[in-house]
Length: 108
Image 1 (spheres, rainbow, N blue to C red):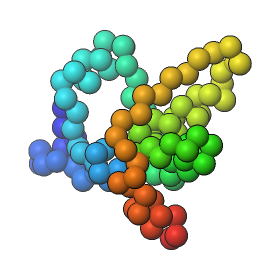
Image 2 (image 1 turned 135 degrees about the horizontal axis):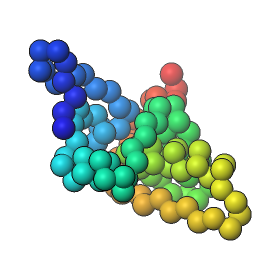
Image 3 (image 1 turned 180 degrees about the vertical axis):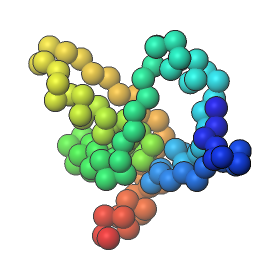
Image 4 (image 1 turned 180 degrees about the horizontal axis):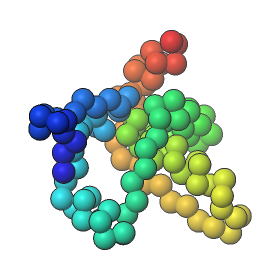
C-alpha cells in the first residue's frame, strides 16, 4: 500500500528517522493491520527525541531514531498500566549513528 495523491503520485513524507521516511508499507504489515493482529500509531518527532534521551540517560542504551518512535509510544502506554503489567519494546539498530543528528535537532 502506498500513500498517493489525486494524480496517483506518491505523497511526500517526513520523519526524523530516515528508516521511517517512506510513503508505503509492505503486504505483511497491511495483512496484520487488516486482520487486527497489529495496531499502527503515529509518534511526533519531538516525542521520539524525548524517548531517545530518556533511554540514553536512564539505561545507557542509545536507541536508533526508528526505535525511539516505538519507545515514545511505549512511554505513553506505560502510564496506563499497573505495576504488574509487562511491556516489552524490541530495539533495532544502533543509535550511535544518530547521535550527531539528534544533537543538531536538540540545539534548534
